[in-house]
Image (cartoon, rainbow, N blue to C red; front, side, top):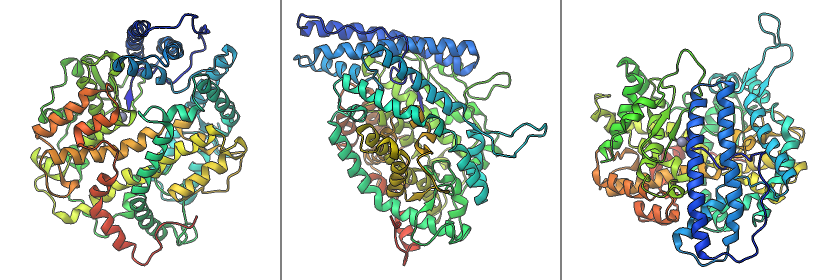
Length: 608
Ligand SMILES: [Zn+2]
């Protein structure tokens, strides 16, 4: 995850109504002046908001929350105002850089407010209200009491722990149903949010809010939708194989009544509240004599590796590619361990405070293999930030929003057994028989996620366009869950429910397509880097550790930031100017072959 003071997320209630365009026709010179002033203003406000957010997440108190909220309000107010003003220069012939900056200013908002101040305030209230209802969500099952006789209540954290760890279908169902009882409270708000959000998008000249979201990719909204569908069709056979294999193993565990032949899988059996990441059921689906060759968590624990040392491993990887050391302030200002004396937001995040050298991470690091990977992910954000720091502020961003999430995950693919042996963390590289277990574990994360990453915004785009009507929100959600993921709800649902709203990114109105394309891109980047490194073997065994040529190509792409359309950045690294899912297929090819053997004689996929 990446923390940047977002001019996108919230709409300030304190917005000043914008006057309409001045009567005289603006010139190219006016546009240049406007862009320079806007860039400086946004940069200044972003810096203030970053500092306020950092303090708030490191010292959670009522006061720091208020300070952070004020700083973000100021930034959002400016973002909204400038996005609307930028429309004035539509149709002018402008230098390329100015035109691109104007587009970025216009597209910076995820939820532009309608022109009417009353509606703008209503939209703000709804957006903030849904986000906080989700954040505070608790359910208290009938009849359960605490030791002192109070009703016993559960948070999302509690429910997620059950989803990860329990193998009792009744318990899983209870946790799933419990968490999904939070969102109906804001179903009506969501209906109104869609009306107002669409109105704001239309006031800016977009067909609806979905069209605005799809406009952020240097192509038309329809072209982007077609690109996503093309990628999905590329990966669907791989997902179908994984799905079919996992269904067989779940049937062995839970029986045919719960998991019938050829049918969809109940959504509460996959180890995650949204069934978007299946790694926590690895032990249920592991190959017969599971031998992944090593257990990184045990090794790190046995060596008493501390949090800083874990981060040093990550930094060392990036340095081995020829990238710079992390600055001294990174080590002084980052948070690596959970403080004992105060509340902090522990969810791992990377920060670029000033657009210069002040990068940080904030994480409560444990000595686990999982956190080892997360550190490489977060440092990917920081190294991207440092690489483009010489770009003007508006270009200090990922080439598109999927790129930023993909960088660190690309590097994490090079944490291979070979690499761990180079570090001295394991003594010998396990032979190829352990590859299937290692690949299956990764597929439960990266392949299982694909249909979910795709369907969340399929649903929202249809909701924004009116194709899915408010009276069919829940039916529409489950139609797509079945079509793409092959899942059914664990209990009967109705239009009283609002299951889409039980996902954070829906409740908080964060666009989701970025996660789908990041999942595709990270394999494409990895393949491109391995090619540059001259690597010839199977893609999943490639590590670019210590390879300066690969590092230089990587750095070149990162340094472009958002200065050019993303296909050019992609081409700089991979030689390809289209997103291409054959890389993820290459990576998992040995697993696909193995899955297809396991699935022999079975019907692949599920009855719709
Ligand atoms: Zn991230």
